[in-house]
Amino acid sequence: MARYTGPVCRLCRREGLKLYLKGDKCFTDKCPVAKRNYAPGQHGQSRKKVTEYGLQLREKQKVKRFYGINESQMARYFDIADKMQGITGENLLHLLETRLDNAVYRLGFAQSRPEARQLVTHGHFIVNGHKTDIPSFKITQGDVIQVKEKSRNSEKIKSIIENHNGTQVSWVNVDLEALKGTIVAEPTRDDIDIPVEEHLIVELYSK
Image 1 (spheres, rainbow, N blue to C red):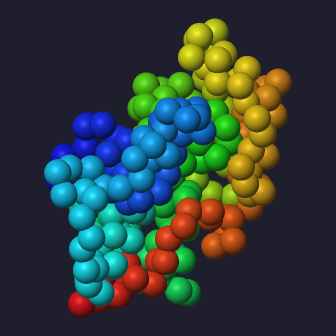
Image 2 (image 1 turned 30 degrees about the vertical axis):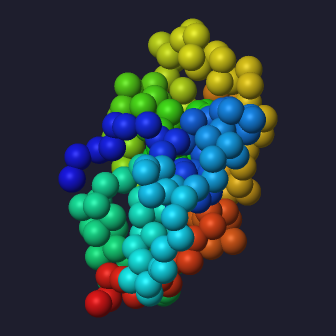
């Protein structure tokens, strides 16, 4: 399944909530979800009976769109989570939360996850002293994520740092002067603020 390249605001409207895929725009009156809080398309405003499968599917789609992954990646993460000790749904969210692109977003070095993924892909960050341009790279407690020296004069990076308004979670620590962040703990379910019922995803994949 190819990566979605269409208007991301349609994804928010389809899920009926803000996925925060457009950065600052999501917090303004221009947000399409605030203006048209119904699904896109000709029949978006019609009432439809939602089945049990439909609820499970929507939760899966919601998580995929929050973290910007495709179907095959989602299935692979679920397989890994299912083999881990603990609660499968929480394991799944933990795996997604510890992706490098999400960590960059949580550190406040990007205004959205899509922007974080782009910055990582373009090689603007180093992890533990090594250039890492793979968005799905798994970070762990103790890892240090730093803006690459050559990227510090980038207008994009300067703009992000100037508008930095603190970290969003307690499991990361940021040093703005050094332009680096440290993973100080493993994220728990309480740290993951996306509105999703992960048990429905487990039920879907368990069929």
